[in-house]
Structures are given as C-alpha cells and as structure tokens.
Length: 224
Image (tube, rainbow, N blue to C red; front, top):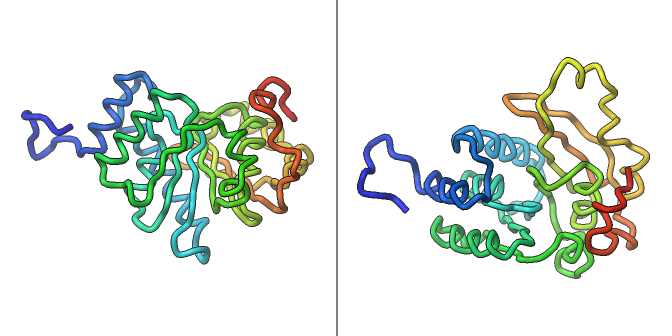
C-alpha cells in the first residue's frame, strides 16, 4: 500500500501491488517497470484484436501468478472483463486481495483452479474472446490449455522469447506448427515485434471435446 515516503514521483498503487508480488516470489526479480511495459504490450495487442468485437470483451489470464499481465490489462482497459486463472493457493489469495485493493472486483475475477479443469467445465469452455499467456509454459502446453477456453474466432496472445539472429533465421513455424495446432482448432497468426515479442494465434474452429487432456498430461505428453 502507499507509504509515508510517497511524493510526486511515487509509484502508483498498481506499482506497489506488483512490487509486493515480486517480494513474495510471484514475479521475476527484475525491476517492475519493464514488466509493466511488457504487460502493456499485451493490452495494446488485445485492444486491437478486439476491434469490432463485443463491447466488453471477456479475457482470461492463463497462470496469472503475481497478476501479470492481467492486472495491468484490466487497469488500463476499463471496458474489459478479465479472469485471473491461477492454480496456486497462495498466488490466488494474493490476487484476490490485489483485485480488491485496485478497485477491479466488479470486472476482474480470480479463478483458483487448473486450466485443464476450467477447459472442461461449462461456463468457461468456449466462453472467452481472448486468452493471455505470459509465462505459462512451453507452446504445446499453452495451446492445449488455451484452445478449449476460446470461442470460435477468439485469439490467444503469448509472450515470446527475445529475437536473436538465430531465431530470425530459423523457421518461425517451429514453435507454433500449423498442423499440430490444427488438432486444437487453432491457427497461427501474426508475430508482433516491438519492445517485446509476442505471438497471436486464432481459434479457427471449435476445440475438439477430447482436449484438454487430464490434469498434467499436456505438460507430460505435449502434442508437439
């Protein structure tokens, strides 16, 4: 919370909350500001992808952890509803408190559950316009856990590793192979290269009922 040493240049309440998340080990140890800018990149892409869509898009932050990018997206985009999906009990409890402190409880919900479970339940399966994934797992795990949650025509925005000469020269389809993604109804989309790197995928058709597989199987036996 804001402290007695606040001044004109003091961090906002959002900075304080995310700083506490970092101290608790829910975020990486680096400075908060670049992490916020990275989350703001998600906001910019998501807003662009939502043009012409529902007046209040419904998004889910996959493995929200300390609240990035979900809390930043919700704070900077008043028209959006965001579910923060987090399997860890301590992180989920932190997110509940953070949501209340930031005054976002009317349109931000914390889901203390595994992604595989939500992907099989009515009310979550096929209900989201967009999925955000910052550091949820390897591409195959992100894809299998995100696709069941998306409505047809929905989109997934994933944080990508920084570009290097080697990665630019490599086949861009190697991380997100079209044929394998097609099993989930997903189609590769654009790569976004700005201060940070992101990948967009589209839910071209409904995810087959056999996905997601049982808890933990997407990571233990990835599709690609």
